[in-house]
Each structure stands twice: as structure tokens, then as C-alpha cells.
Length: 597
Ligand SMILES: *[C@@H]1O[C@H](CO)[C@@H](O)[C@H](O)[C@H]1NC(C)=O
Ligand SMILES: *[C@@H]1O[C@H](CO)[C@@H](O)[C@H](O)[C@H]1NC(C)=O
Ligand SMILES: *[C@@H]1O[C@H](CO)[C@@H](O)[C@H](O)[C@H]1NC(C)=O
Ligand SMILES: *[C@@H]1O[C@H](CO)[C@@H](O)[C@H](O)[C@H]1NC(C)=O
Image (cartoon, rainbow, N blue to C red; front, top):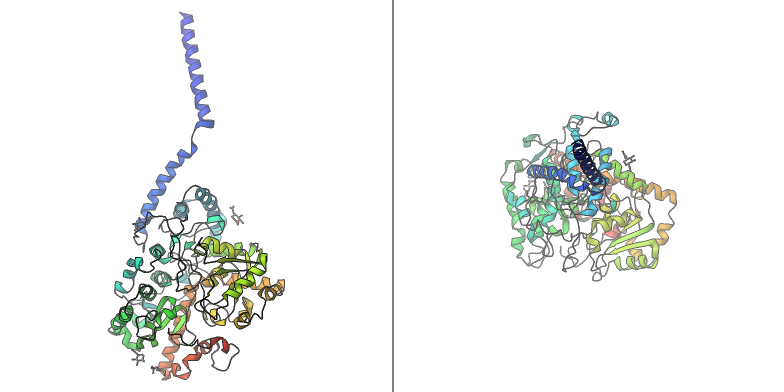
């Protein structure tokens, strides 16, 4: 009996040992730890859903489940699309989750590792960062961080006096409805992906650690109409009383309007019709009659030449928005202005960087300061074999000739290298100088991508930046850039590598530091969360626009008319230097003959 009990006890004992061993073994080796993360994925999805519900401005897109295809990441304001071939697929996230809170340094580092671990696994990268940002208020903060948070919100810091803006409530047919027609805007690929998140586009994530975990988007170069309006909706000095406004904003998406009609043949009256209708609508408003629209402004995210069709012929390019009588009174803001006209002013092209805090900008600037730059100069772009005057062929030949000192991404190649922000930013981040030859027009988006990457821009024509971005770039051109004469390159009188390698090291360092300091001025911060200490491109644009409108008001009070005081052909000189006297740059601004814009 005793033996029997003992045996049973022993059996139980060994059974228990066995069970414990099996448990222990599983704990050590067998248990799939990753299955635990199921919990976090579930909560993440919930988070996403609630965020999506909150997300403003997100639009439904036709190809949501489709992999994002190539971006028209043309570097130039290039009216000619690179190619009609099948786009390459790539792995950028599809999410339109919106992020509301600020980032702090500690959080950022946590995000980097988590984020990148997931990035290698699958494409849904961005959500985790968004989740962490959302949870941030709940997460413990480091003590040191609190010390920096003494700053008051900007609205409390800075008075709104002198910078009130009234926004016209125009019918949606002049803005939001264009976004719904995004499928029409470019027949070679889907533009709709670029209008999510208030025009910032899809999240870029941090592929190859070239960027930061948050704040980077696949932004299209022609998205500024939408981005500007998104930021304006959050502007701290909006007023509903137009009589106390310092400026009146017309949120017409002129760039999107005209882009519907650029590629197929439309009659000129179709191309022009919305611009005419808009002005008809505006003229019917009491706000217009106060000053004949001279206190109004609008922002068109395309180059001025898309709005200056001088001939009434169906084959003419673009519409005639900028030539209409009303447009002579309204301050027209574009990404490239005409050197020969008085009524438009340029502000920077959007880049991929849309930070949501000052700290994020500072961290990026520091990253660019430390960046190793092994390439002396680089160029990303396409040749212009059909443009007799283009210096691009010569520039590309010189680049090839100096081998390792110059790197190039040629946009004509089948791999669509120029369509990928990763390729471009990697090139610019690794270069000391970035060449910015004119393309179909004076300016290029690439100039601003290069500045963001801390790469010193090399211009060949002052029309590419110096006489354009008067509110954003310093007058002291030599402090942050190099100008090599376009004419000298054309005549093969200049060796670019020679010029650049002769610049002393100390001068190069100081120029690069100036470029890095310019970064905040050329980026459009995330509309959902404005910077507190730094002024971004939007802030500088508002200051410039209001300054311009103030001077028009002053003129009217004094019965003057500055437009009559100088020849429009010399506008570039008048606006840049305040005079129209002969200038050493005159030869750059001979109006090309035979071109009907
Ligand atoms: C983006 O938002 C739209 C509209 O809110 C929604 O229909 C779509 O599913 C969202 N896409 C993703 C990838 O979350
Ligand atoms: C975060 O990253 C920065 C820059 O790489 C580094 O200086 C800092 O020590 C890191 N912070 C933490 C908490 O890891
Ligand atoms: C432009 O402004 C002037 C001065 O206020 C005004 O006389 C003129 O009618 C305006 N033009 C248009 C088209 O409204
Ligand atoms: C100012 O002068 C320009 C050029 O002569 C003219 O087109 C414009 O109508 C004038 N504006 C006003 C308000 O008189």
C-alpha cells in the first residue's frame, strides 16, 4: 500500500518535473516572442483608425491598395514628362495617418530603431512612428526636456498686428474639386498620391537612414497651392473681418487648374475659363472693390510660364491667368516668377522635408553638418538636346570627364532614378556642390532639395535664384552659392571642376554653414504643427506678401503708381536692386526671341 502511494507520488513528481521542463524549454527556445507583438499591432490599428477619422484633408484615392508607383520627381519645372513607360514600384508607405504632436529627441531615437527594424520587414513603416508620437504625452519625459518648454505658443509671443489675413471663401470648384480630378493632371502617372496629407504627399519614412523617422514626405514639386492653403488654415492671425486684414488670400489652386489642360489639346477658352470665372466671382465681392483687388494675393504652385499664354490659339501653352487685368492688381505668388513682369513673386518649391518642431529642424541641420561629403560636385537632371542654348550637355560632359569628383543622376534612364527621393537626397547629402543649370526655365526644385541636403548650390544664371526668391534667400549671394557664367560654359571657356576645387577649404566651410542655416527658410513645416522659434518659407512668404501689399496701399494713399515708374522688362532689376540702371547681369536677361508663353 505504502509502496503504491509512494509510486503514485513519484509518478506525479516526475510528471511535474516533465511539465516544468517542457515549459522551461518552450520559454527559452520554443516560444514565438513575435506573437506577443500582436497586442501592439492591434492597438496600433485602432490608433490608425481613430487618426484617420481625425485626419483632415485626406482624400480618397482610386488606387489605394495599389503599390505607390513612381513619382514625377522631375527635378526641374519640366513641362515635358520624362517617360511614358511603366513606372517602377517601390516600397514607400501608403498611410495617410496624420500626426499631431511634437517630437522630442529621446523619442526620435527610439523611433529610429523600431522604425528601421520594421522597415526591413514590410512596408507599413510609418505607422509606428505615428503611434509613438500620439502616445508621447503618455510616455515618461526626461527632466531636461521640460526646461526648454517654457516658450509660449507663438500666437501669444508675437502680436498679430500688421499680419492679419482674411481668406476668401471661394466655391470649391476653384480648389478642392481640382483635387478630385487628380486623375486628369498627368496622363503618365497618378498625381492623386501627392495630394494626401494636405498636399505633403505620402510619408517617405526613413529609407537608408537618409532622412529622419518622421517629417519626410514624397512631396511633388507642383503641390504648393495645396500646401500653402493647408498651412493658411492653421495660420494664427486669420480674421473674419476683411476690413482689419492686412492682406486677403484667394485660395484658388491655379496650378492644379491649369495642369488639367497641359497635355491634351483643349481649346484656349476651356483652359482659361476657370481663371475668368474666378475673377468674375471676386469682382462681385465687396472686398474686391475696396482696392480693386490690390490687397489680394494668390499662390500658384507652378512656374509663371504656365499662366502667360499670350496668344489665343489652342496650341499655346497654359492659360492666360497672369495676363488678365485683375491679375495686374493681385499679388501673384509662384515658384518661378517672370523677370520681365511686375505682378508675380517667387517663393521656394516645396521639398520633401516638412518638420513639425524646431527640434526636428535643429537635429537635421546637425546631421547635415556632420555629413561626410565625398563627391566634389554633382548633378541630377536630364540633358536638353532640343534646346540649342542649353548648357546641360556640356555640364554632363564635364561631369563625366572628371570621374570620381563628380556624380550624376541622369533622368533619362529607364530605371527612373530621378523619380526616387532616396537617390536624389543621397546624392546631394554626399556632395559639396550641387549644379543647378537652367532647364526649360530658369529655376529648379533641385536647388531647394540641395539646400536642405547642405549642398552648396552652383548657379549658372542669376535668374535661377538671386532675382527670384527675394523674400527667402540672402542678398549676399557669394556667402552661400557660386555663380558660373552660363555663357562661359556654353563657349567651353570654363572648367567647372577647376573653379570649384580652387575655392579655399575655409570658404567652402563657411558657405556650407550658410546653406545649412538657410534650411528653415526654404522648407514648409507640417501644416498640422507650426514651428515655434524658427520662421519657415511660409512665414517669410507672408511677411513678403504683406510688405508688398502695404507698399501698394501706401502708393494709393499718395496717389502714386510705381508700376508706371519702371519698364516691366526691368522688373527683375527693380525688385532686386531697387533701380533699373545698367547692371552686369543684364546679358542674362535678354528675353528669348520667338517664344510665345
Ligand atoms: C486614406 O484616407 C482615405 C480617406 O479617408 C481612405 O479611404 C483610405 O483608405 C486611406 N488610405 C490608407 C492607406 O490609409
Ligand atoms: C539620440 O541621437 C542623438 C544623435 O544621434 C545622440 O546625440 C543622442 O545621444 C541620442 N539620444 C539617446 C537618448 O539615445
Ligand atoms: C485695379 O486697381 C485700380 C486701383 O484701385 C482700379 O482702378 C482698377 O479698376 C483695378 N482693376 C480691376 C480689373 O479691378
Ligand atoms: C499703373 O500703371 C500701369 C502701367 O502704366 C497701368 O497699367 C495701371 O493701370 C496703373 N494702375 C493704376 C492704379 O493707375
